[in-house]
Length: 380
Image 1 (cartoon, rainbow, N blue to C red):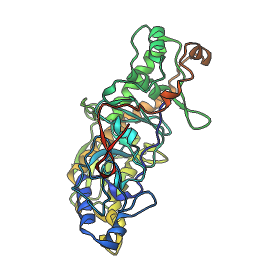
Image 2 (cartoon, rainbow, N blue to C red; image 1 turned 120 degrees about the vertical axis):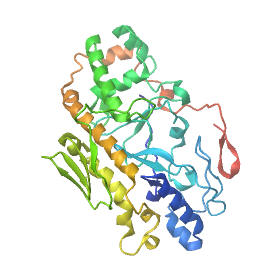
Image 3 (tube, rainbow, N blue to C red; image 1 turned 90 degrees about the vertical axis):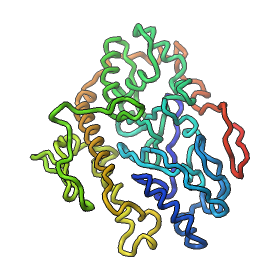
């Protein structure tokens, strides 16, 4: 997958949140503020201030004049991946984002998948942002019309394995077979044996289904009957902490509880921390930001729900399912051996390596116009 982009860098935490209602409240508070107070709430940086205009993000509707001149109406929040397995929401207004990476927004649609470089490959249907590894879109253009795969590779693999090899097949193989290389990048051996290829695809498709969580219209993954987590006690007061009882396989959120939660889901780590704890911390961050002086003194980051949203409990059930499935698959992935692999010389002789320089850059010609700063149309 030759084309890789760093994820969008927000520059200010308040433009993303675990629920869209919070983002609308923050937008309203910023628009209502004036002068020095608006400047403080905005959290200006070298790249973005209230006096900075910016082009509308591809596929999004927003003002392009400086926020101080024409804030406009609140843009519709979009779903993002803020941290591994932590799906949140973002205000898609480039005037608020230090480095939005428009090239990623241009290819973001219901056909797209993004491979995120982490300790283990992570795939999401939502735009990855923030402190994540480099992002490799599966497709270079909207509509899935051009794969971000080394030119000639699918045809070569199809001939060797005796069947059509599509972009998603290559992605699934990466999920199953990729391992961290000596310089941080993945090493992806390509099986010489068709049987090993098919075994890797079967494992990769199971990993992919668990990670995307039904986001592209498919069925959400489910655990077998008897292992599916349920809400045993509803969350009626704001939970102060997340706790786990391994003997009862119960996850507690204040006075609420979910079970059964297998130990593998609780212990599942991403970027060195438990994924469930990262998820919970993100949903209580606004209360920590408020501190003892109240949200007005703390900033927009302190605005958030006063009561625990029921939707978050549903999200937690889905996340527990995903992590439990991935924990079950982890030993299979660790034990998977691609067997003898295609040599670099064979890939070079076939013209697959090295990929051409254009394949490492985003596609530059699109079939629509984009609005630039001040309402002018951008040339692509």
